Image (cartoon, rainbow, N blue to C red; front, side, top):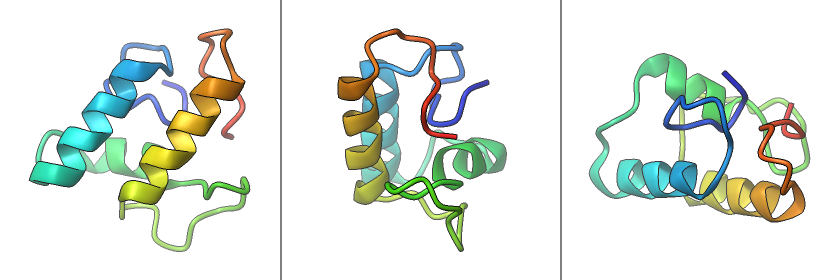
Amino acid sequence: IPYFDANTDGNVDASDVVTLVNYVLSGVGLTTSDLYRIGKYTSDGSINDNPYEVNITDIVTLTLLILGNNSNEGGGAG
């Protein structure tokens, strides 16, 4: 499963943004391993000190990743 693939469908796309927004607003819907996979890297590609904390910054990072990566392969973030 690629990094930032929030809904674990094998692709990194707009549906992952929706999943992250729902998680940030409600606090439910992601497992511990989902949180780690999403929060492991920061927007500059470095390792996050607290990979289990997912917030609006991760949503922005994911959105920028998607806009810069139209191949739908889910690569680029790690």
